[in-house]
Amino acid sequence: MNIYYADLHVHIGRTLDHRPVKITAADSLTLAGALEECASRKGIQVLGIVDMASPPVIWEAEILLDGGDLALLPGGGYRYHDLVTLIPAVEVETGEGLGTASGAGSGVAPASAGGTAHWLVYFRELGQVKEFSRFLGHYVTNMTLSTQRCRLSARDIYRQARELGGIFVPAHAFTPHKSVFGNCVPRLEAIFGPEDAAAIPAIELGLSADSDLADCLPELWNKTFLSNSDAHSLPKIAREYNAFSLGGSNFEELLMAIRRERGRGVAANYGLDPKLGKYHRTRCLKCDGVVTGEPPQFTCQNCGSGEVVRGVLDRIAEIRVQDRPVHPPHRPPYVCQIPLAFLPGVGKRTIDRLLAEFGTEMAVLHQANREQLVEVVGPKTADLIIRAREGRLGISCGGGGTYGRIMPD
Image (cartoon, rainbow, N blue to C red; front, side):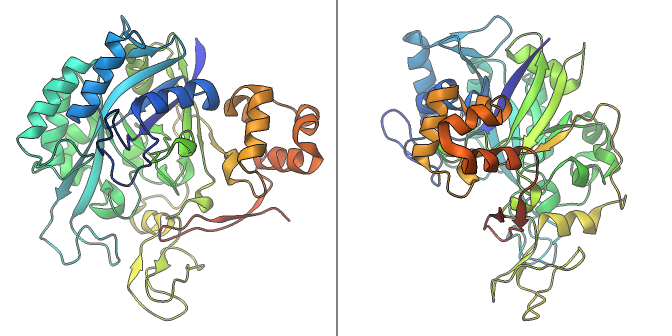
């Protein structure tokens, strides 16, 4: 087995012919651009692009195939220049129980009985993606754009994905606006029923959550946890990522890892310290204050307003069964990691010098020692990188869409 770094949730901003896909994503975030960023700068070896159901994105992937930049692997997935494996994926948005409570889908407290959630489906090859795209086209108004509302239930999507051989995963499962736990229901069974809920192999933790928080919910103890970036720009790729133990870099190996079969699995989850996440604590929509009290808190402590964006920590405290996490034997470590771009005083020029010396961000974050770093960026920045690696930086909590801040001194 070898370790492969994987970010399995990256969007496309524009296609080769400049058509928009993810409206909120950067124009530079193209399919080829994302693959090259992973190969030459990030050191990500397995990349999940989640807008592959968009017909223009399928067309662009086929151009890369015809030109020899991509090649279908025997185990599924596509190899880019023998450096990165592309896993084609689709993100779908559904409304679960909408209309049963006022304000549903807004992410604003108090928690409603219904809301909007995003779901990920990973596929072996483009033929399956095309079939899934045709299926969704009957229920989605504009298939060109990313993650448009689907007029089906999540359970319908799950069953169609399973029929096509896809891997179905709840996306950023705890965030307040578009997630199953953060904005819809306290238990998967409420949407999928006991049998289908148990069969879902994994969840994506998302910003502002980690394994300690998620393992306060016993129904998740049999799930594999994924930590992905949901990147909307090239620099945000690998903000969160996974270290997989695999026998090779392809879809079949990834499937076995997510199911924890034949010695494959997630060796570690890497992500922001949850406190840095932009939805970690509840934030007031009136005075912009972030709560600081014992969770759950859904009322502003400064002005008393109940118009707030619910924090992930507060929502999990509301729905958890265990006060403390219980980690199953298969759960790997969750490593709180701060990407280079998040470090104060570390700008593009500094990052470029580091990458020129060490090759990729993965090499800087995991392999370079202090002495090597000092030679490139000096002792102050080297010590900052080492302290970030070791979790020795102070953090003020994020909330309501604003990232937390690093307080190095």
